[in-house]
Length: 119
DNA sequence: CCATTGACCGGCT
DNA sequence: TAGCCGGCCAATG
Image 1 (cartoon, rainbow, N blue to C red):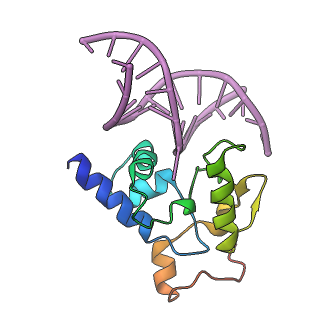
Image 2 (cartoon, rainbow, N blue to C red):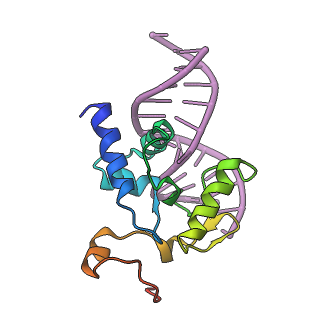
């Protein structure tokens, strides 16, 4: 599998993350069929043309933290967009237990991010 | 060809 | 919870 294919599949996966849900770089890599490709996910997003609309803000570190410097412009933007999605961001971090995207489950439940507690 | 650098990760203190 | 550490892997100089 060449780089272009990996990049495409990574972007396709990111594009499927529904509003109100988030995924880690590693998770996106797995779902995209690129094992241990967390860094490739970050690379793919960075290289993604500004033209294409990708919900890149729904991709976080494994611990739920925003991957940009706290004082950076990107950090602020990502935080804003997450909040718009209805995701609670505190201390530059999201509760992954609560918001992690579960593709199979979401499809099973029909679609929108559940607003009930699913501990 | 080697060294460094990340929008990273998981295990272990 | 918070670091530290070794691993990871493509891009860059």
